[in-house]
Each structure stands twice: as structure tokens, then as C-alpha cells.
Amino acid sequence: MITETKPMTTSHSALARFGHALSDPTRVQILTLLSEKPYYPADMAETLEVTRQSISNHLACLRGCGLVVTAADGRRSQYKLADERIKHALKDLQAVVLRVDPRHDI
Image 1 (cartoon, one colour):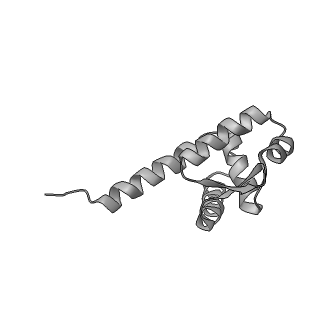
Image 2 (cartoon, rainbow, N blue to C red):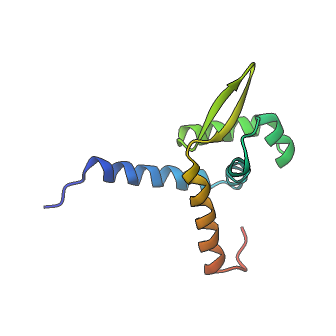
């Protein structure tokens, strides 16, 4: 008889949240930006050429997924990756996708 343990459930849940976050190209771009350095939402919107409302919605999703956190800076909030290992995971995933089919671009 196989029983699920809490860590296994947590791992599956974390992978599902990560997959959900990566399912949107704008969220992928946000995570890529944040893997370089912390950003303010307005700067992300300008860099990615999307509205501030769009950035806000995507950041809410990424916060809910547990992938980004905020740091208060006066009246503004700066965003960064919740864990440095996310940066490495993104690089590893990009390498795998490129090796599978480098011609396939979404």
C-alpha cells in the first residue's frame, strides 16, 4: 500500500505552481528579469512594454505561486525571486527546451 507523505504532496504542489507561472509568456519574462536583479513594477512594465495593471496582475499570480516576494522601499515595493534556486531552475529549463527542439518558439 502506497501512502502519500506531506513532502511529496508539497513537491507536487510546488511543481504545479511553477508550471502555472510558466504558462504565460509575460510571467516568464518577469521571472527572467527578476533572475537578473530586483525590480520595481513600474520599471518592469516599461522594460516589457506592458501596462502597469498587467504587471500587477502577473505579480499577484507569481506571489500566489510563491515564486516572488516583495521588499518595502519607502512607499514603493521592489520584487525579487523568493529563492535563488528559482534562477537556476529557469536556466536549467531553458537549456532542456533548447536541446529538445531549438526551432520551436512559442
